[in-house]
Image (cartoon, rainbow, N blue to C red; front, top):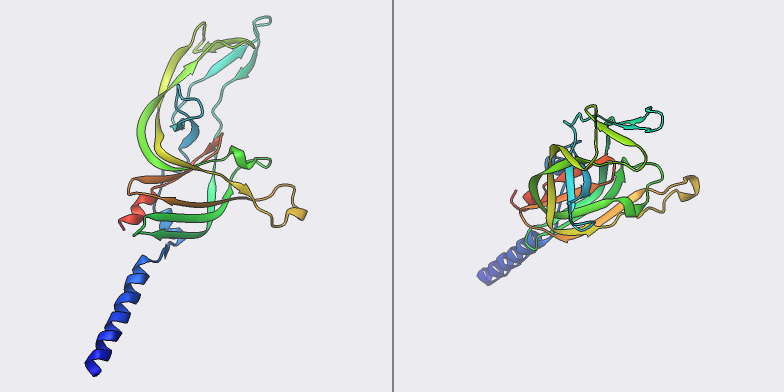
Length: 225
C-alpha cells in the first residue's frame, strides 16, 4: 500500500513540476537591461523605396556633415545644419514574462523621453528580425533657398556620406496608448505599452520615435538562457 502511495505522490510531484516548467517566468528588469544594445545610437526612419512599410534605424552619431541654406536674393545664410545631441527613449517596465515552451514574450510598462505633446501614434514599437546595412545620406535642392555643401551649391540630388543602419523583417508592430492615472492634474497622460508576442531566438524589441534614440533589446536570448 505504501508503494502505491509513493507512486501517486511521485506522479503528483512530476505533474506539478511539469506545469511549473510550462508557466511563464517573470524576468527582472536588470535581466532585460543585460540584453539592451546600441544605446543612444540609432534613430527611427523608413527603408528607402518602401514608404512607411519597412522600419529602418540609422546611426548618425559619427556624422559631422555641415550644410547651409542660403537666401538667393540676399546671399544670407538663414539655416546652417548642426546635428543636435538627441535624447534617448527610456522604457520603465512594470511586468516582464517569458514562456519558453510556447515562446511567448510579454512586457508592460511606460515610455519616457518623448516630447511633452507627443501622441501615441508617433511611437514606433516593433518586435522583429534585424538586418544590418548601410544607408546613404543625400542632399537635394530646396524650394526655400540654395543648398550648399562644403561651400558648393547643390544643383541635383547627391550622396554625401553613408551611415550604419539596420532594418526589420518578419516584424510585428505594437501601439503605445495613454494612461488614465492623474489625468486631472496633468495636461498629458503617461505613454504606456502592453505587448505580447510569439518570438524566436533572433527576435529584437525596438522602441522608436522621431528625433529620439531608440531603445533596442535582444529579447530572443531569453529563450536560450
